[in-house]
Image 1 (cartoon, rainbow, N blue to C red):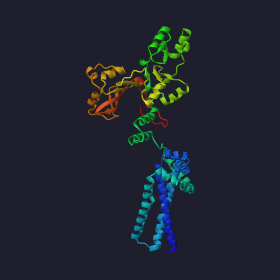
Image 2: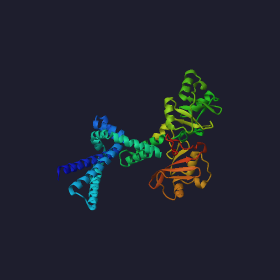
Image 3: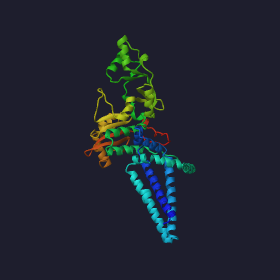
Image 4: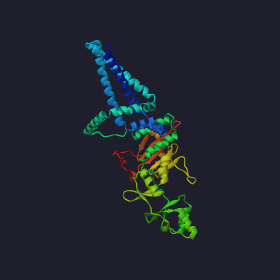
Length: 435
């Protein structure tokens, strides 16, 4: 073999090495955990910091890797053909076919499959190890990267393509569920994270306390009547009504302090200005607003100005952490009002007790005597799985928990026309389902 042929062969091997490097880098940075890279970088690992900066510009990085990989593979195949011609002279069609197949197999095996397999063993370690040399190659390939990125942008604009988020909310939810299944996070942490994801999609109509369940004071009441009402209630804040309008919020301790100190209390002077919110207000935005204004209670009105109920900061927090009970709360393990037109009930509760708790009128004694578990089994024809739903009339059942071949807990939604709202509009213009 003459020196030039040896040089060509060595060049092929070098290009194959570059192909392996690009393939391994692609696999490493696609699978790298940015949170882990960030943690390593914050602990002083410079290579991790470099890998993180490369990952932050992943679109440009991926373009450069693909361009570099295609370039070295093409040149490698060409040099392999030249090497074969120099060794064997004129090639027959059979020799050409064999050379092509051998070159393709070598590039696929040693330039693609093997390096990607090795990188997949530990994406983060591979990304950290490859970062310095990859940055150097990215700098060399900058002109080609800019050219192809520009062409990609033009094609995208012509075809009307739009950029999509790299991770969707559904994917994050799946990641949380997978983490719980694999034991990375426990059930309580998983529930909290899932609640946080759903928090931005929850509206005031889903959590408010309906006005029929609200305790309030009236400007027409005497001091003795107000004191008697306060004595028999557990609430620290009460709406104040003038005729049929909410005109203020009374902080009970201020009223009692004034009465104890001076022997009298002026309700109109002690009440504060009420905050009014619409039914369709997202509770995440409202929580921020109420926190800034140091407001713990807001009055809910519909689009026609009718008072529908009230919401408190505690209602919002319960959407994240579940029901919050204090020592004065009456806890019923079989039935709970969740807010709005949502209720939670035990599967062993009778439908009659459920209807009474919801304020739902139904005089069918045969139906009222059935337990929720039995009713759903009969209607669905089988034991449902957790998360399954069943509609009947204006009642919507969701199975929350199934234990020991029994429906343990359900969530019931009462379709109340005045609380039915259209789906929320997301920032990207897409609609989300109601809670």
